[in-house]
Length: 550
Image 1 (cartoon, rainbow, N blue to C red):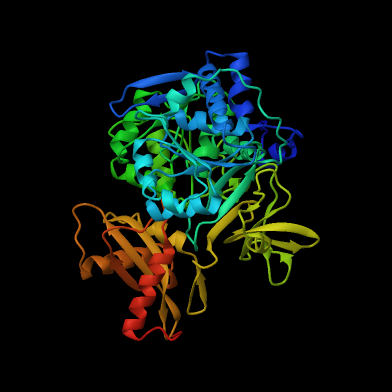
Image 2 (image 1 turned 180 degrees about the vertical axis):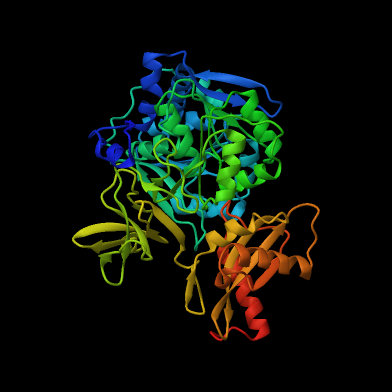
């Protein structure tokens, strides 16, 4: 655990990794606690009607052991076992069981369509799928294209493939496989913001690698009485390794809740009704909650957010509503939770994502010159290898794995693909993905700051910013706007929105093109798919004859 010191520098100096040779995620997050305090609450499972069921660590241990016996009948160590379930106790049980038997868990999002499921199940060669009735129906239509998939276990319905029926006949005792910290444990596919999703293979140690970032982003988590929740699905690294597994590692109860559709009111009610003190709220969720600010504050001990840069408006709103400063963190599927702000140590710096988390060496590099960048100089955000949180490789993509790394000054660095700059305060400022940077009239412009400014306009619910090809400037800033209720698209409003940015930021940053759209293209984790917006912008430029690149 991190020890809180007076400054971030002292906190970093006081931290050192303790990664044992042998380590197993399932033993750590379940069996360890079940042996010490079997009745301690692990999961608070909230049903659609608001009723809640508490599940102890002992209950998780017993059911996961039974599931191991079921899985072991046809799976060997290293086999991929898919989990297609929403936030629920069975999702946690499945991951614990797969880990304890030495398998590789493949988390799948319940809102995936057939193409997304087929790609991941085919590419991984998953042998077993653990799901519910809805997932079983989705995958049934794909079975002929999935020769490796032998069994589907459902937590609902009757028949030979019912998980509970199969588990009931099995013993509740099992001796976990002795895995090494570097043995593979999780295969998590990227969200696909750039190109086809790739499978990032992670070792058991990835959980230990996440802990400092989780603890920092939640103001030195855990504290007595902590109870955590996130609307992020546990199929994603943000839900699974930023919330579920770290909380269980620390013995902190996790609230599992399956909203049919996320709404601000439902989120606020859940926090109040279940005494939630800590939450990971993605920026998209925060923006929706800000549109329906409650009459009375909803006090929390810590709120963390990541995925898109937060602006000063959201941070100020969070202080007003939650009574705490929202801590922004940064990472990606391949190497997560490596940068974070921490209000318990330093006040937030809006627009700047935070410090390198203790234990991680994060810097900005000039790939062309092969050197570290100076303060304020734009470059590529990179993480020095080796690092406990870093992925092992891309699944079946050795060449792509090699391309993810670069050698600078005798060290190997993982390239995040994002652009940033170091600040005088020691933080790292996120500028944008390499392909998101807009080059306009000699200026290099990152979209995040403009998007943050745009959402402060009362008519703007969501905003995505990209470059539109332009014969004179190279590119111009184009803003795609999803309006709030009560506002209708018109030229007057478009000009007002553009002027709003021009007066608050800089003249070269304001959007010369404003387009209104009904639905913002988002990944399933809530990130804006700027590649889709760029395609729209490029198509419009071709029609208008302003794209000189074709």
